[in-house]
Amino acid sequence: MKGCSSLPPETASQLPPTDSAHRFDLLRTPMIGPFLQWRKSRMTLQALVFIVSVIMAAHAFWGPQLAPKNLGALLTWVHFRGLVVLAVLLAGNFFCMACPFMLPREIARKFFTPRWNWPRRLRNKYPAIALFVGVLFAYELFDLWGDPWWTGVLIVAYFAAALAVDAVFRRASFCKYVCPVGQFNFLGSTMSPLEVAVRDPDTCTRCSTKDCIRGRRFDVEYERPSTANADALPIIQRGCELALFQPRKVGNLDCTFCLDCVYACPHDNVGLLARLPGETLAEGRSRSGIGSLNDRSDWTVLIIVFVFGALLNAFAMTSPVYVVEQTIAQYTGLTVEWPILGMLFFAVLIVEPFVLLAAAAVCARLASKRTDTVWSIINRFTRSLVPLGFGVWLAHYGFHFFTGALTVVPVTQHAARSLVGWSVLGAPQWQLGGLPESVVYPIELGFLGLGLLGSLLVAWRLAADFAPLRTLQAFAPWACLNTVLFASACWILTQPMDMRGTFLGG
Ligand code: SF4
Ligand code: SF4
Image (cartoon, rainbow, N blue to C red; front, side):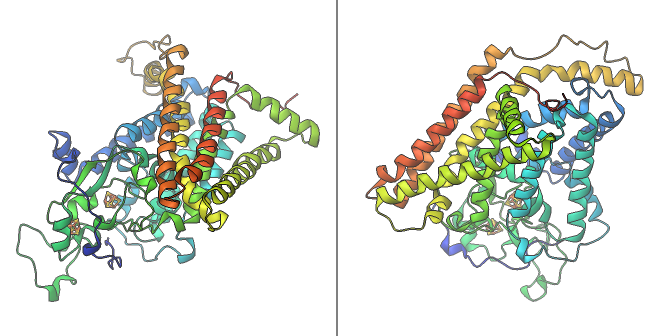
């Protein structure tokens, strides 16, 4: 396996000024720090989650086909999703760090080496965006939250897809270009308080090997080989497979927290450092492995799906969506669900964002007296929606997690008895549930409120950069848009839950 074969064009002398010396560093804390610095820590975490995934898949296929009593459905749609967003909120992209889908790939790569590079035309986020929308659509169409068997199929398909892509293509192609969960985590982790970053930029300036991206070819215990033969040596620790050159890396986008750069750096100069959540969303400068977000339309489309998909996914669990679908069915005469759902997705993921973002961009353009194109303004300001979008995901997934956190106990007890005949865990305690909805509702509102606050702050920073002399005028339309989306999310939270699925049956 290889790290990056060529360095990015940036040089360490172009490093942005940062004050890393006084930042909290998780890798320097007792116990957690030494564990994460241990090179087998990622594989250990992956193995644990892999074992849980195998149990989930087995129970999904051979356990009771009633979702609340099935580990595959329950853990996937209640606990896994809730824990992912909470981990991202409180720390960082620790799901990608412990990703079980990468374990078979790591083992397989010990026996063969992929030979192809990911196709140049697909080196963007569009493949992952298509899969992201596809998973959202399948989730609603097949009522995946209530179908253990199809949930099991999804788990197995995910493992197979990750293995197939990375068996053919070099480096972390699946993570960077294909995985919809990864893209979700990348965007969510812009709101995390930790990032993988250099401790001392001056050390990078003096560093001659750039092992954090090239990969390390010698053991630091021994003398460095001469530069003449260094490139001929095998790589003993790969560098960043996602093409993020540490000194030019900005924030958590595209970072899987794999810590390969930590292990590769011969100067112990990479840490898990504290950073203000959301701060990097306002930055337009070029990022290693990504470029400037101001020029990346694929990232803008991904953010649109992330934000409006959050609203759609939450809305689809409420009673009003039933009315909307019935209305569409009556007007169109359709009697099957998929085209009706397709119209709903088209309206919420394409028409609504197009109208709202274009309106905000046109207003910002007129008010700030700038001459930029409408799309370039959308490209620049859509990032301000990320904190609010993440707040909606948090509120939605947090609701399911907090109200059902303890349900895993009786379902595990039942599974142990029915699958392998273990009674050591005791009789299933079916009365266990979670926090009452009256307690969870204020927490949900808190997530949304924090999201709105973050979005307004990011919008203000973007507006100040876009129109220094007319910041308020450029900011106002995006503040209005974020407030409208916040109000619609609050409205969704107040709606009664209603599981769809049989509405056309009669
Ligand atoms: S290998 Fe370490 S010191 Fe060198 S550029 Fe990378 S992070 Fe900086
Ligand atoms: S920068 Fe690259 S190598 Fe370092 S943790 Fe992130 S993805 Fe892994």
